[in-house]
Length: 429
Ligand code: PLP
Image 1: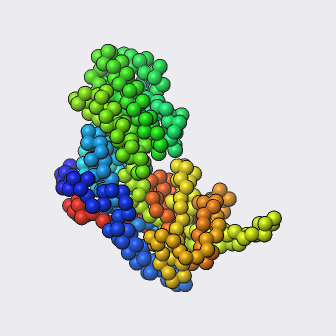
Image 2: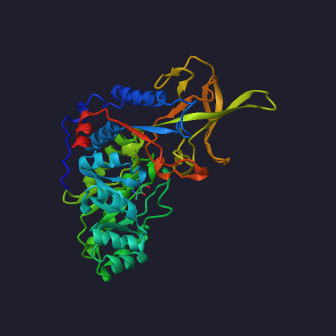
Image 3: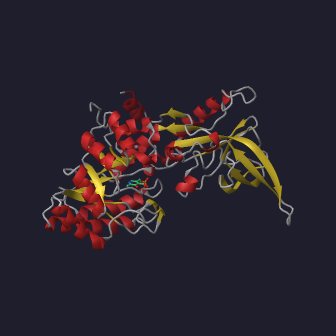
């Protein structure tokens, strides 16, 4: 409500940072923020926890990802998947850019609504919903929601009979980082029966949704899913439903986005006439590259191989898989450590350090042996207690699934920078 629309002044192709190469403006801002924050920490005198891990987020990167989306998939409206990173500044920027929001719980809907986002820009995209959350959606007017089984239809009829329902279909997600169709999605041989039941219950099915798996590396999975969705649209139309919304889900990666868009866009146009509205639920695509995390080396141990007598090293950080590296457990992430400071040297963005690299395993601070960020990383031998490491590409499925295990914090500070004036203007407004 009252939010300014998107200002997409410069066509994306003409944007100086668009070619995907290193963005100097962004790097400089992130470097400054990291350096300033660390300079302000006196390791010998700071409060307990004063040297906690922290993030630097470049909101300009989120903005560039939005322009990149608009350029490559102009027909498809992004509904950002809040679960991926519910950072309020990110949500604000995306709201001001005109995005919709994919919410999976009452809390996510509440967050979006509390920011003034209109309920018709929210989809409650969860095929197995909590009854009281459906009542909440009904009360707040969040009408669009997904289903994939018969019991869910009875629940919808009981708690929100006028909801606009999308039938989520299963996909071939065998080539995705995180498979979702093992848990959700109606098999194609069940969709006709589900639509028939929806009709008997007097429900309002308006479309189809799918998710090809989070972090997919197979663009053709989208094409197959679009074809399947077409068949289900036809089944719905035969039963008299006015099918007018296709939701092509999430899964888009930072690195394979153009490859996906180049097959998804034409497939959507081939199978769905222009009067069908098409939305998507990208999560990691928008935020992964925008966040960098810096963590402090709290301990170091030398280990000698009993056979080769070679030394390797263990580094212990004050953040781990129970914290912002939760994606190692839940999202198959393989974070890459880089040296931020080593003694007096500030090494952010330095391609290589002229020193012998040795093998480290990198551990988090909790007592659990599972708390391992990386079992094998190569860093200079001189890295030691008191130095800082950083990890880029930490914006997706990181902070949002951190825990308080062992009493370590789950709410690490985020320092915001913005390498795009267009984004800064939207955030100020
Ligand atoms: N939509 C739904 C229903 C999901 O379950 C997820 C992720 O689990 C997403 C969207 C976002 O996926 P991604 O971050 O891979 O784009």
